[in-house]
Length: 140
Image 1: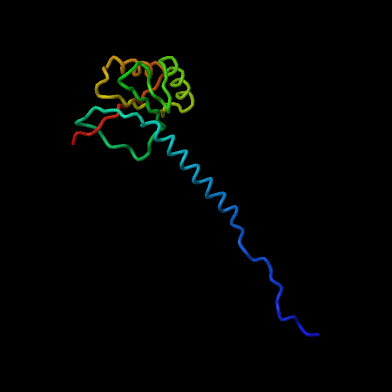
Image 2: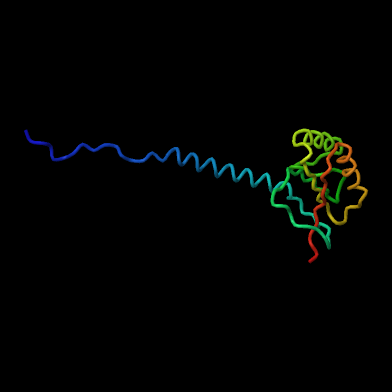
């Protein structure tokens, strides 16, 4: 008997479907993560200038950014406007969740009077948040 000249062709191809799924999920994750990160600093504010200050530490602590627009009494946190009572509840929840390592950064327009910033500082002290910073731009 003579052997066949053609060998049976097997299916030796690569299945790329799982790879495409993983890459697609990574793309969606990074798009959502970058969108949420941009919401914290999306308000166009003219930050005050500072002559002194230090560089950002390499290991950033957990941070909550509070934006204080010059227009009204509400503040902008995580993509939404909050009244003072809602800000209080958010600070309490974040402090309980993240503990003493939590840092609150206040971003305000340079034309916002201190009378709008002081209640936020007092609220942070009342809740027990000890790390409060003010975002500025460097003059030099």
